[in-house]
Amino acid sequence: MNDKMNICLLVVYWGPFPPWFDGFLTSCAHNPGIDWLILSDQHVIDSSPPDNVKIDYLDEVEFKVLVKNKLGLTPVMQSAHKLCDYKPTYGHLFEERLNQYDYWGHCDMDVIWGDIESWLYSIDLASFDIISTRKHTISGHFTLYRNSVEINTLFQNVNGYKKCFEIGTYAGFDEGYFAFYVYQRSIDGRGPLGCYWDTKIGADWPLLIRRPRGWKWKKGKIIDSDGIEWVYLHFMTWKKMLSKTDFSFVQEVDQFRITRIGLFTKNLSIRELLSYYRPTHVLPLLKYYSGRLIYRIKIKMLKLDLDPIDTIPVDYRQIKD
Image 1 (cartoon, rainbow, N blue to C red):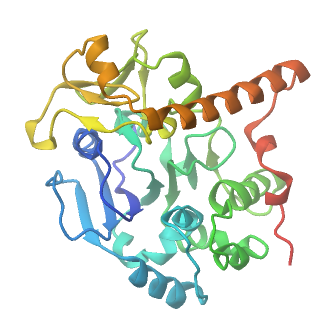
Image 2: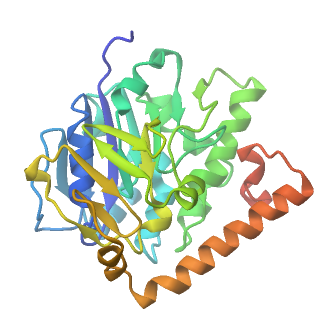
């Protein structure tokens, strides 16, 4: 068993909190040994967070000032999605807020956590500088970093990294350029860099397609319809439709179902489920799943066995000066 580590997961989130926020908080509360720091531009918070979740104010203006002071550049941000590029920089940008922690990480809000404490402490954390839940690449929705100057400034070693931050749209720095640099660094011997990322840990889009009604959070654990436990569920492909939660964090529920339209503590009839669907859900749903289906067919037809790092676009592998 590992010695207990101080761990903080950091989220920068602008705009109203999502409809599933109470479910997110509930799942955080059942991992009391891990802290979450949410930096938000919201003055009014509907849900009081659990003891291990802190919500502080940070708007776009303050963030840009911080970036200018810490990175020496003037950021351009056309939308909040641009924040994803900055995720590998959080250890450096927010070093004063994170100085009490052994590891810090970035994560997303479209996640319901299972028992991540047990999973983390099954790993020899002290042996690794980076712990990612995607295979051989950085996971934007959950990656941990050793809290050291070397690791917190690792992003500065990516050739031309500032160019990614000086364009207004998302450039794919976190899961693209930076991920490829870390991958190369982990295998080419340029100094020790230990990465724990040999297997995919979280459940997300392929499983969501096959099991759209088969997910349950129960007493701090994520369980699928076969009774298999997962570390967490990432429902990125559902978040435009997931608009209903029938409980609040303060109710301290023991379990709830996770569907593409909401989080429910009770069993709903087909009629009740259909009542939550909207016409605006149809087109983006068809577009997304048809694109994924075409991609999978191509992979099968070409008989490719791709390592996830091979799916990173070539343009991400080297930022041109």
